[in-house]
Every structure is written in C-alpha cells, then in structure tokens.
Amino acid sequence: MSADNRRMSDEIRALRRTGEPRWIVSLAHANAYVPMARNILSHLGYSIVPIDEWLASPELLRHPPELCIVDQQRIDELPADREFEGLSLVVLTGRGGVTNGDPRIIGGIPTPAGLHELYRLLQQALEANPRSCVRIPTQIQAKIRQRDREWTAPLLSLSENGCLVRSTEPLALDTPMEIMFDLPRLGRVNTRAEPTYQLLPDTGLVFERTAPGHRRSIQLFVEKHLSP
Image (cartoon, rainbow, N blue to C red):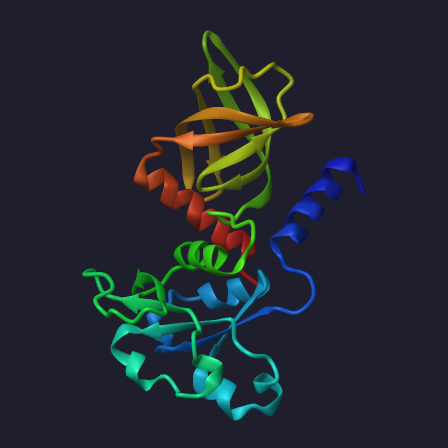
C-alpha cells in the first residue's frame, strides 16, 4: 500500500470512533430523519436507537444513553426513569425552531433531520474536541488560482467547510485564493478559499462564500462516500 493510500485509510478510520459507540435514543418517527442519516451516523460511532427498542432490550439497557433525540411534540412522552433525568435533548422541530422551554434541550433541527445537521449537534454535545463537519478522504484533482498563478494539486480530504491539498507550488497562508474541482455526477465546485494551516507536506484550506448549490454538492458527495 502506498503512503498516500495508507494516509487515506487512516483518515477514514479517524472518522469512526474506536471501542463502544455513543448510544443515543430516539423518540421520533423514522420519517423525521433524512434516509440513510442514521445508518451513516452509526458507521461514525453514533448509534441512534428507537426508544421502544432500547427499553425492550435487556442488552441495550446495559448501555445508558448519552443523548436523546425527540420530536418536539413528544417530549412529554419521555419516560420518567432515572436514565432520562438530566439527559440532554436534541429536538426535532419545524421551521419555527424550538418553542419548548425544557432546560434539557441543547439544540433543535428542522425535520427531516439530515446527516450534517445531526453530526454538528452530536459533536458539540458529546465530544471534547468537536468537529463542525464530516470529512472524508478523496482522490480528486483540483485547480488552484492564487494571485497571478494557476496550477493543479491533489485534494486529499474534503468537507463542506474546507479541504486538505498537497501542492507542489507554495501556498501563501491567510491569502485568498480560488479552488475548482469536479465531483463525479455532481458537477464542478468553484469557491474562494483561504489557506489557514499546514500539515506538512499538505495545506489546509477553509472555504469562503461557497454558493449554496456547490455546498450542497459537497454534502451529497460526502454522504455518498460514507453510505454503507
């Protein structure tokens, strides 16, 4: 296996938690989630289990949940068991946002809840060093323009917020640039970016002012890559 392939394997393993998963109970209908969102999150280490399934399983009951995802209209249906005392809640709600004053609520997501929105809140609620976006390894050639120069460079990892590139040309840190790359079956992404850090021999870019359609293309590409 080449060094680059080993690095990409390490990247994808890093997306997944090691050891026991994070156990999360759900009091919401299946259609309150975007299709495949829970499956992908399970592969990333967040096991979202319907609350009736959790309560009916002696094996699952040995794993106290760390979080509960609940339909805003069903908060009163949560069990009074001690496992739910002080358990943080992520509320699935409508466009009006969270209207319940329950102090256990840490955030809300409009239904149907998508992978990226759930990932952000789960990271913030459960991880000591949270990430804002899911990142995946890639093997994509990108075109870079900075100042009066233009060249190509491999894009090694990608999220909706940025990417990691391996450039043979020097990249001036904190200097705006433009990056373009093609996503299979989703088209070209063209966005401004700023080099913000070095992970030698690579450089991390943060996307700026990405068009909503291009951002959505990146999200779909990430989801497809992670789908089991």
